[in-house]
Amino acid sequence: MKAIWYEEPGEAAAVLQYGDLEQPSPGPGEVLVRVHASGVNPSDTKFRSGWMGLKQPYPRTIPHNDGAGMIEAVGEGVPPSRVGERVWIYEAQRGSAWGTAADYVVVPAYKAVPLPESFDFAAGASLGVPAMTAHFSVFSDGAVEDKTILVHGGAGAVGMYAIQLAKWGGARAITTVSNEEKAETAAQCGADLVLNYRQEDIVARVREFVGKRGCDRIVDVALAANMEINAKLVARNGVIATYESGNTPQVTIPFYDLLYKNAALRTVLVYAMSEEAHAAAARDINQAINDGALQAKIAAHYPLSETAQAHDALDSGQLIGKVVVDVA
Image 1: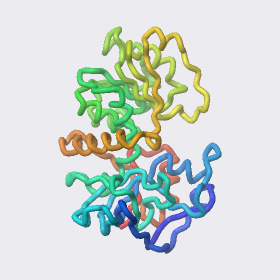
Image 2: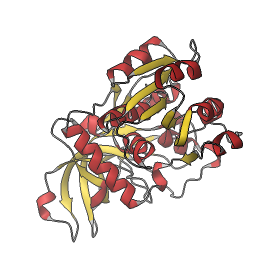
Image 3: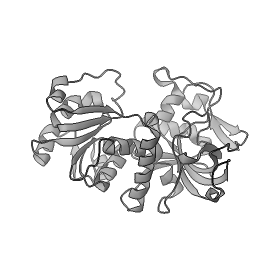
């Protein structure tokens, strides 16, 4: 089979190799998926680069956790009826050297989720990490009906899904963006209020919209930059769910501002979520898709042989939407 792999960390063009590898076979409880599309996430490029000392646990690694395709074979204990099923894949690389940047991938059967007919393979490959991160950030502390959710970075991969899932859950969604193009994207996702953090006073504008009570949930991609804003805007008994600090290892916390509101600061790492949280996310994501409440935005397509260019495009930070590698 054709595949992309690397044997040491480094720049994409320097370490990513393209060629032929032996096709894997499914073991007990596993499925073999013919990959049609492979999604690229920041965690994939960080892991490949050795970001902040990340180690390569395998002599050879096929990158990418997310993907979509069709099940071609099943291992012992998996119903044969799953052969031919369209699926989206999450966390293929968790505990494995076999990612989705290849013609075939073997994953535990539960990580191959039935793909709704309304989503093509590229859209399916854009779910996984960002959609599950968004789901946990929005719903990990309970239902959000009639609540207000502030999403920082509403045109990012996680932010777009967070807005849509919040609306699907019955909440009002406020979001921040950095320019007009991103504002249009966030509005298309259904945000009730879109604010340009480079031009507007976020605290004042949000308070105009929600009043003194504040936001029940805050979903944050740059905690270090937004911590003071969050502390002012989080509601009493509210939750700040953050999946990134803006690449800042140390964040100063205004402790008493949070304490007096009994507010919680929750860090979110999709790879550390429980199996129950993953299952709940997969179920709700598919339901939101079937309800017509969730759409994917694809920024760029690259052939498998140009995966290095796909990594560089993602890392450039210039694209709005997912970068997808077309495999089949």
